[in-house]
Image (cartoon, rainbow, N blue to C red):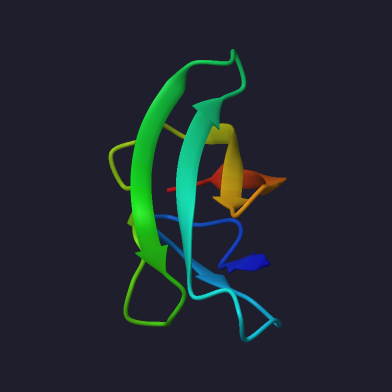
Length: 79
């Protein structure tokens, strides 16, 4: 799984290189460990995204879960 754009101002999109993954659960966590956004069943396409525009500038972590697997990626919000 990968996300783009990063850094971002307003939205994050997710893509998978594996065809069997079509949707994921997303949790965005602040650098202090606070859950700031939770979205379930996000479809992996360019038309579906997670809106991070209400977040302050800074570093966040995206916890991406599909099946029994979890991936954590760093997100930079810069406006």
